[in-house]
Image 1 (tube, rainbow, N blue to C red):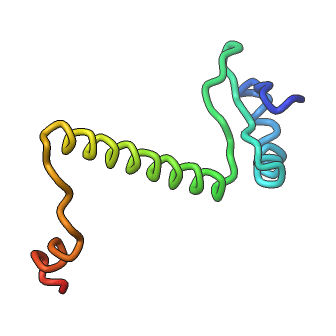
Image 2: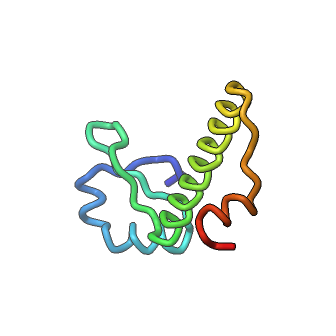
Length: 91
């Protein structure tokens, strides 16, 4: 089976242990389909944690870029880090 082919739900149910082992060892998702359409995937838990962390990092980068754009549009300047620390009582 290729990496992108999907198993039917009934086949996945019958092979669940092997599917989990394959996802953990190959580090590729195993897709499950209903009526020929992919609806789910089995993925190694550590791989999922890494993907979620990367997605959060990307969201943070987009938010920072949006903040920089808004600040530039408003003609504002960044607040120096030393001033932020002092305002928070960290300096």
